Image 1 (cartoon, rainbow, N blue to C red):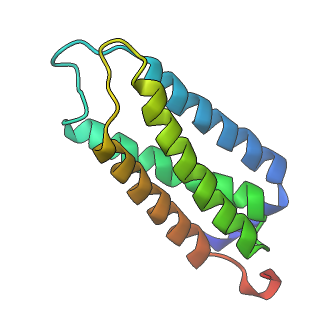
Image 2 (image 1 turned 120 degrees about the vertical axis):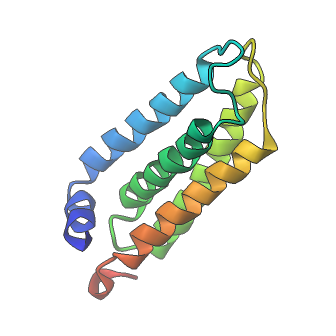
Image 3 (image 1 turned 180 degrees about the vertical axis):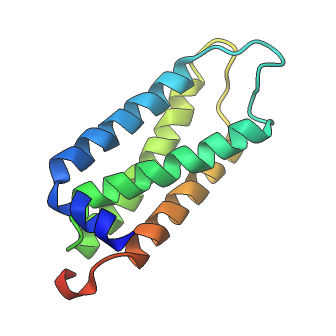
Length: 129
């Protein structure tokens, strides 16, 4: 996996495109109106969605910001991803039939932490500052 992260670090423009695409996807899903019984915040699918999508969002955001060489990029990625999770829930509070949930922010945060740990564990330490 280290080679994959190094490749994305060298090709940071692609990492940014993927990061932005994931952010747009998250925003789009949050904009959808769900009727009753269609998988609200209590379903296992919603739980897995929150964790998995933010694992990838955090990893690609950190790749884009740090390029495998900067601790500050990783910290900035954590902060930006966390703020995006909060803003996503705030945005969702304006969507008819949806509401904002602290549980969802916690699930998003878990995904962000997992993504950050995966990325950090696979960094090439010889170039890291």
